[in-house]
Amino acid sequence: MKENDFPVEISTLKPRKQVESLHKPIEDVRSLLEEIRQYNFNLFLCCSITYGCLLRPHREIRLLKWKDFSDDLKYISIDGARVKSKRNRIVPVPEFIRTELLPIDKEFNIFSRSTIDYNSDYFKTLWSRFKKQSRLLNDNQTLYSFRHSGAIDIFKRTGSITKLQKAMGHSSINVSLTYLRGLEVPELNEEDMPMI
Image (tube, rainbow, N blue to C red; front, side, top):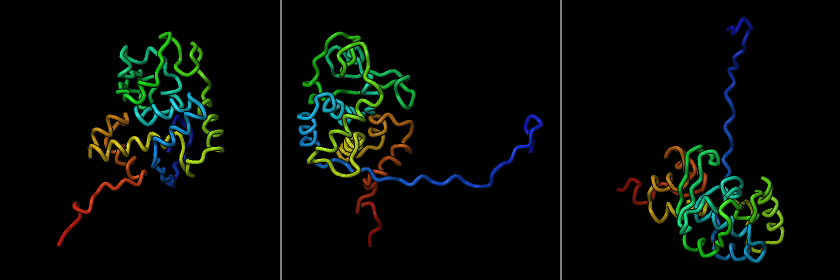
């Protein structure tokens, strides 16, 4: 085969499948959040928003400005340039998060409390330091475990894969199904299985 008069080799090898890692959900979110609050308020706020709004911590949350919140703090609106799916997202803000918010200048970042955002490793560094001294954190639990735990909570309460898809900002239901498989959430109940 040739392309632009250069020979092109086409490999017959298939790419290897990525090994799925099982994210461990957080059993007691309230206690872990309280431990994080005692350690660092910004990390606590990030974890709370990751869990309660299902946003991604390192970009979507880290770059939040007060202008991204509605005047009553009940919604966060993020434009597609800052979202993995490249779609605009509007997510509700639960009351347990709203009570922690102290808005100032609309142009200020909610964490730095200035117009300058913290660097991309800010939460990663805070999390690594917190992890070393935490009494409650288990192995394989990361900042994203809050997002995973929030997803499990939504799915268990609503039983709706479409609501989960919308809440997570997934591009399709298939992405959400894959997500649940990786979280060890059973998609079938005993009642769904064949009976005699």
